[in-house]
Image (cartoon, rainbow, N blue to C red; front, side, top):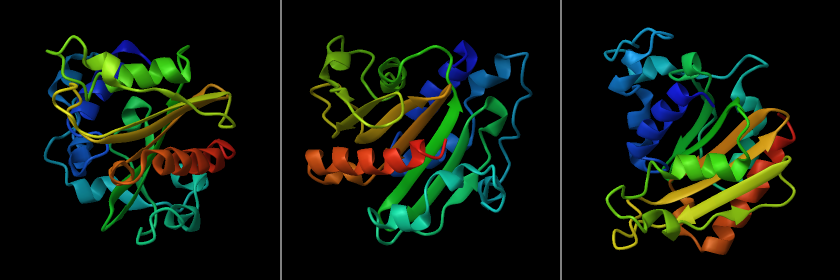
Length: 208
């Protein structure tokens, strides 16, 4: 992932990874405008225009069937392609329901391992003023998902420096990064949450 994209993604992630506030990521952060490689996105664009049903074979929604997602989140609606970050190389599909949101994203890998990518993304939800916060995050190696995979399941704990609930799995396969995120799984048993992420990621990685 380029430095510009990495900075943008971390800022977006900090706005509310795997929480209901993930919708805030639909508008790129202001610092993206400083890049000469991209034009500033129109901040007034309606969010509804950014999420469209997936009908093309290249949609990231092809990575998981609605049935597979509903096996974990029974009331999930159909997957919808989210286009707001495609100009930055991030393809995304969102399943929504009374459980919140479940998101699958992909982008081109730039040399990082899955755990390195997960550690970079974790900077968006740990307290930068707490030197020990980064050591509070547990990175779980996940077998059988792509070439390598790392998962994080943590609940908000300001004393440990974790600013929000997060359930996320990052996998690398064939030069692509796959990221799954949920704002519901953190409310379940941690072992169950890790198992559900692994199951969904196996299916998605098989279709990368």
